[in-house]
Image (tube, rainbow, N blue to C red):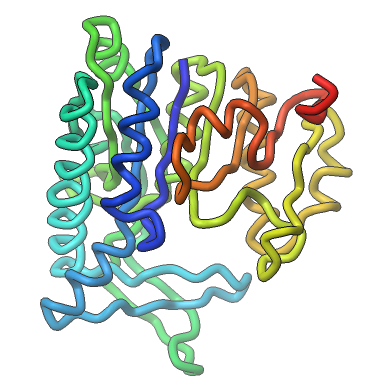
Length: 276
């Protein structure tokens, strides 16, 4: 069983959904899709007169300030347009897809952090009424129910916090925790790069394999935001996920090519595809 995370960047977009659908239509094993929607979210927010507000924390992490009106825009973009366009494309290719948010059936719950502190446009800010949070629990019972009855779940943030408040959570974290909960054989992350790069500006600097049995060496080879991704991948493998792959979502047959060795593979005693 695979968990497939499709990034929400503009470089993948609706056109890329057809590549995933055509590829997955031939798959015999069950899979769960988790998707983002950041590009659509940002575009809709601008159209509604609420341009994205990005805040950088003391640790260098950049977050989007999500007040109540912005959360409404997120629900429209993620749970509405992006989710239903992707489900429609998958179903058009014969895949029995069902679209859900992580709120539905209590799939994902978390803790809201209503105050966001950091730097915006060079100034220190304290922003209140933030509707972002940290994923704390995943309940995969509804996902398993769908899989057991021949459906392919297509999930998206947000999650739910106490008091019935939707919260913006990390979609990569949602995919990872689902993969662990479901005992997935593989967890695939697709974005607008060929995989994890030693140099973010150079697509030829692809790191092919990362050995999860040597975490210190794996993290030493990582840089910048890649450190967080490698830490997450190592955690997934340590919790029983067979392998984690970071791959290109802009190409044809993205899943098949990722499983065949394209991208970056994280697994215990990783072996380069050419010598496997």
